[in-house]
Length: 306
Image 1: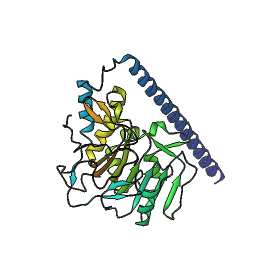
Image 2: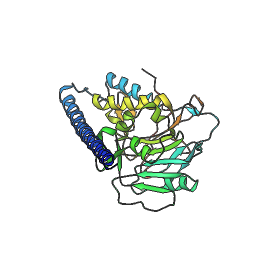
Image 3: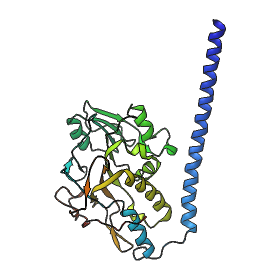
């Protein structure tokens, strides 16, 4: 019996050692991949011929139309959208929740939990992530705060985690109706490019602030953003857009581009859609900064290109 116990302990120790070794290899590979991505960005930036006058470039125009066609909103049939959260910056436009299990992920908090609080008061368990703050501005019994940022799985470290791992840790790997609110200052592109279609299907609604859209004519950035939006577009449809007016519109390829854009996505298999009859902003919207003029986006329709 003692010999058996010793053999079992040795086997478990060997298994742990092998697992730790593999984890170190994965960590090293992830760091190497991140370094290569950064080098690729620098090399491409130096060697790739920059577009002359991107504000007037036909090539830039095609890139805008390709990317933004994935963001062109449609109307949602049979549901009224509503604004949730505080006035001005911090409110989000969304459809009435259809979630039975009432789970919501709030990625990027800063000093605002108004959306989180309103959803918690509706009975939603809120899982909150932000590595830039030491605590929440207020508490609720349904708040679950983690001092971690969210990024792609190959970029995780002691401060950053990935959505895939957190969903698993929280026991939500079988959930299919999670609400996702995301404002993570540019990391959103890598996060969505990293997710698979079955993982995106877990989210019935995605409320997101996209950053750096004025970089659409930069090839390396464009490829990552297009990969992310193509994945979202397969499973979700944009139904509302709003330009964050804290930054000025930029002209790229003849289009007026909001560098920061708030978008509401609904899952295609849960809702029906019809051609958009609205213009943006509308009565659901409020300026992020009341001292500045709102971005007038019109119908925000772009020709779809593959």
